[in-house]
Length: 301
Ligand SMILES: C[S@@+](CC[C@H](N)C(=O)[O-])C[C@H]1O[C@@H](n2cnc3c(N)ncnc32)[C@H](O)[C@@H]1O
Image (cartoon, rainbow, N blue to C red):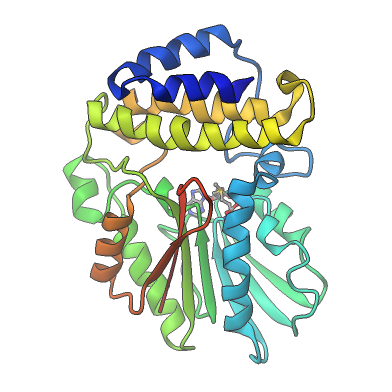
């Protein structure tokens, strides 16, 4: 079982775990699979991802915050940056009064998936653009879940230092805060607690170890644990097996990719808190949303 192999791996000294990971990957054949963050329909691997307790934990901590923020508001407005398959909104609005959800996401598939989750009394405004360039309209709640880590660099200067133009996380956070200020709203950010920012060079041993920590010691083992407990029998035919093998174990290769191709530029909790303070966020609360201490919810005004 995957969980046994992974538990053996994490018992090794950390300096020997990368080699053990390569051996484990060789032992388990690569298969055709859907690329992360591309397809969000009901048969997608992303849909299987959102059924994992790890992902469900994110939605479970976000829903009450959002519900409180729109309670009693006529014509409420929510902005979501990065919609995925819209799992957060499944049956969420059944008892809510009419309102508007604006989705900012460059992937048309996410807009189609989110639209499919909404009842008729919720109007969807689609902005098919990345958060870096989109105008963010005023709102009561802004949700940015597992998305901002796709933007490299803390800010414009850090990006420029590594040859990238455009804005970084800070400037987007500042625009998010401007969007909630007029309506005295609240912002919800969810991100993994790990450090893969652009300042660490490809192949840096600390970057490799951090990728192993986030994607193998925590995410892969959380998936393997869920799979083992589900008792579905043959793990090799389970969609979670593809997630584990390709979206977790293979992800470690990004530690060697060129900076511009790293795909994930995550920050640990201390770094997010420092960045939120720089952006002017107030009353920041943060909690882990799963027992693996992977994903963190930050709520602020
Ligand atoms: C990992 S999914 C998260 C989806 C959902 N929020 C959740 O928690 O399940 C990331 C989403 O962000 C979108 N995305 C990626 N880069 C983005 C960017 N620069 N601006 C806005 N959305 C982006 C992807 O298309 C995808 O829908």
